[in-house]
Image (cartoon, rainbow, N blue to C red; front, top):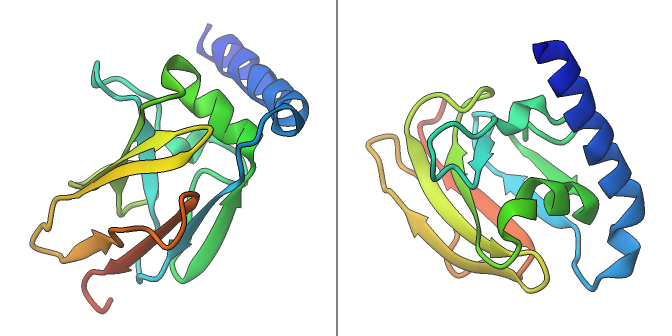
Length: 144
């Protein structure tokens, strides 16, 4: 049953990718990971059971020292439950484990609304204010 649910979710996500980016003014979201660690996130995780972004093919993990441009259709699908205040809990791992380094609140149509850095012991930070409404800079952390 889990495979069927995952297949259906990926199919719906694919449909959103192709149909929605051209019908809105939303831009692609750029995640610029300037650290030595990969990043992932959990979207709209208020009930603490949100899926990890690692399950999104090609876009769900932002490798170290990489800019990941996420198409607006994927952002739409991820934020569908709350397009005006979509929350992303950011982790510096490839599987949403470890501490949440920051929480980003995002409006699908207008971009980043707020960034709450947690300033943990490993020193990761998301630039606040962002360089643009649809651009996330992840910096800091240990050297390796």
